[in-house]
Each structure stands twice: as C-alpha cells, then as structure tokens.
Length: 86
Image (cartoon, rainbow, N blue to C red; front, side, top):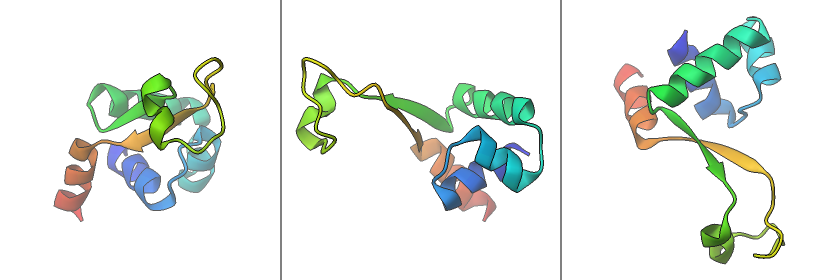
C-alpha cells in the first residue's frame, strides 16, 4: 500500500490526503498514517519556505514575512524505489 501512495504522489503530483483517499478508496486517517510512514522511511519530505529559498522562489514573499506554504516532494530514495518497482 505504501508503494501505491508513493506512486500516486509521483504520477499526480498531488499530496492532498483527501485526493489520495478518494483515488485509492481508503479512509483519510489511513492515508495520513501511510504518508507518515513514507516520511519516516525517507521516501517523501516536507519542504518549508525559508530565507534560503528566496532566490529561486517566485511566490512574491520576502524575508520579512515568508510564505507559510509547505510543499512536499519525493526524495531521491523514493524516486529510486519507484524506478526499481516499475
């Protein structure tokens, strides 16, 4: 099931628990648990806006008030797993 969630994240680029739950027909609490496991295993990570990201960012925020948006990404370890299994 972890692979199915990781594969969904990779193909859809949508890390929304609600979207994953609907697509895989699983309850949201289970999806949250699976996402937490993927984080703990190093397959996905949360990317939080900070000053170091400002030079490549186009969101319009500045260093005095950073964007509170958090993004998610699949790590290199996650991409390698997807390549192995595919």
